[in-house]
Amino acid sequence: MSSLKKESLLPVIIPIQMDRARAATFPKMSFRNIIKGIKSGDEIKEIASTYAACRILSRECHDSLKTTIDKLIKAKVVPKLVKFLSRASNPDLQCKAAWALTNIASGTSYQTKAVVNAGAVAEFISLLDSPHPFVVEQAVMALGNIAGDGPKLRDHLVDQGIIKPLLNLIKPDTSPTILRTVTWTLSGLCYDTNPPPSVATVRQLLPALVHLIHNNNDEEILAEACSAISYLTYGPYIQEVVDAGIVSRLVTLLEGNEVAMGVISPALRTMRNISSESDSQTESLLNAGACPLLAKMLQHFSLDIIKEAAWTVSNIAAGNSVHIEALFTNNVIRPLVDVLSKGDFNCKKEAVWAITNISKGGNVEQITSLCKFGTIASLCSLLKAEEDEIVLVGLDGLANILAAAKRIAQLEKVTLLVEECGGLNRLEDFLIHHNVEIYHKSLAIVEQYFSMNDYSDEETYALSTSENHERAN
Image (cartoon, rainbow, N blue to C red; front, side, top):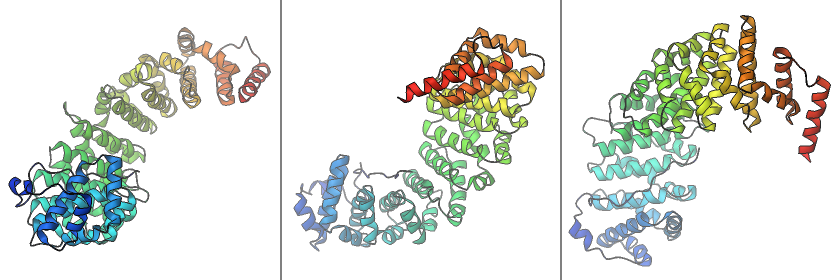
């Protein structure tokens, strides 16, 4: 995964004891004078110069910011800013130093490591116990930027003891602003999965994340906590997440009519990842009422949400016939086939996997029931797709439905549906397809379920290989 960092913008309210009038007395400073002031040893100049550094770091555009950070690192001011963090007698200076270092740590990996190598981690962790909320919030954000750089610095934070003081901030009297930043930093500690955080780390973080999800209606907090949970399900911790009792809460969250996209996306990703593993984990979703929710999400206005929902349905359909039956009884099939017939192509790809999984793992009644929803026409339409992989998935689904229909003496009815929607014409077109696997699958379907009038096996194979040779040139 790529890094997950934030830049710290200038505050709307001047923090701590710094009022607007006093801030206004700080003149605009040249870069050279900023460096001189930070190194001056004069506390008044140190505050003014650090504040000026915050201003330029907060206002630069992305490319210019990297250049400015490199200049500050080259000027050797990062160790001085780190020393300012321990100036407990001057919380104004602590806050501004933390602010500047937060933005330096939001840059490249090299720039983040410059902050870490200057000894900032231990100082930031100690500031989590500061009596000054603005100092605490800035320290939390800085630590989040460091965590978001990658697994090595994430593990370094854990080794330095970040978890306990960070979790201690999750309490009733913590301001919503700080709690949002704490949750974002927790998400950063879970973010990278290569390698994932240690078992010990996850077992400390997971109860806190579950608490935040169960006891909050704040959209930002819910979004970050759900994101953290979703990151954990990309690694080896799906069972830990299920055992934490979070599944039913995720379903409940998504049942609301005005759920923020920032909450829906990670919650749905978590459900999708849970459904990708064992049958028992998938059953935790079904028991929590996930199927009616998925039927709703398949009709969402966001294509990304529809795609995630179809992917999750596909995972459920890859289970046993009991799981597949839950899709039928909870009215998931109708909106799924609607996606297959009318949806965006990326959504259709997930939907065709779901239909084909049902046709592979379902019983005969379930498979043939797909025909009632217009599945045949939708599958045949997808055979026009340009992606060979999707065509192959569609052919598998069609073959499975035809086989099931034959077993219950409904083959003539289903083959007629295939012919009426142009599916047979498409299958015959594939008999001269450049992709040999598509050719063989199509030939098998036509030979087994339709009369072969136009091509013998030898003739069609010769045409197929000839076409393949021409395209290779």
